[in-house]
Image (cartoon, rainbow, N blue to C red; front, side, top):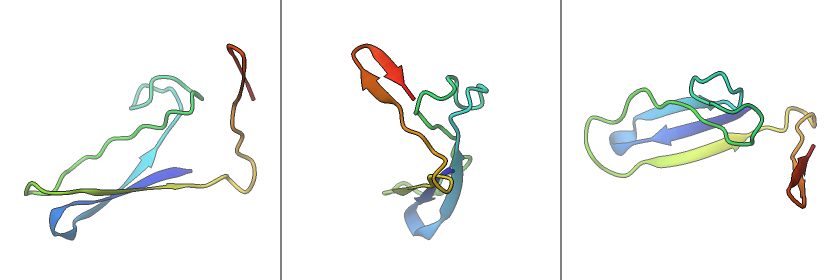
Length: 74
């Protein structure tokens, strides 16, 4: 599970689930290690945003690809 917590000006906080599924909404390539998501709304005024990303290893079931030359191995 990968989730982002976005806090905007005035303390408005949104939670965004990020995906690496390749379904095209919003991620276009499955299992490439790039997690994407949509932030549906922004704070009503300009300012700084704080973004925190939380990643779970799914109770040890997650794997990370290893590079060997030009190949990527799981």
